Image (tube, rainbow, N blue to C red; front, side):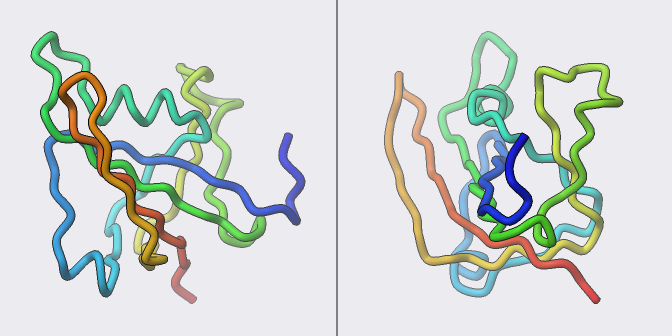
Amino acid sequence: RPDEREPMDVWRGMKNLELTEGFATKGGTEVAPMSTTTDLRVAVSYSVGFSPAGASRALLFKLRAESFMDRGADLTFLSCFPGEAEMCFPPLTYLAPSGRREVFVVEGVEFEVIEVEPKFGS
């Protein structure tokens, strides 16, 4: 179990999406509850899809939570899929881009990793 005072990274994978310049500079808000995972492998599997055809592009958000106040709720204890290590963020979570971005190709799939900082409305 992570220390609540330590920074924690969680991941969100999305298939066949591209980052817009507007989001890269200003960020954006998720209007629905936002599912993330502490397991990078789970996010990668969602970003490439579960179909045999897979994806050609994958977008991964790395959400950097500086403390427990910036984290979503750990749903592992009530999940039908506890291996997914799900953390759920509330509706209207703002994702502020940190400026860190990386692109790489693995087995023909282009992965774009964008680091964002989650912010909750007050």
